Image (cartoon, rainbow, N blue to C red; front, top):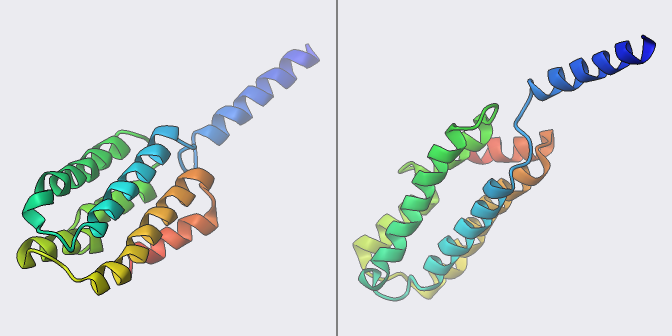
Length: 148
């Protein structure tokens, strides 16, 4: 009887802990964040070439971001990650501004690439770190970026 009560209490505690807070680690989200980072950095690397040569890859990046917004919205207790992907989707994000500038100007300078690449890496590193750890420190780092 005592064992049954202990087991019931343990199950109840596990259920309560899993029903509050943030979502748990998601391998797919983590992998897609790193893949999207690689795609974005690849585009920055070739931005000294004509945009039209890389228009399909640029659109694929936009589509990936849109897809990740939809994917993250389908998960529960996931507000921070949703906000981050929505930020990347918005016109205010440095990724969108980069793509718009590249399309408008046709090519970007090598100096621009050197300055912009670390910024892109930082965004995705913060996202991957949050997905990997789901702790308060990684959450605050993402929120700082979103609210800048």
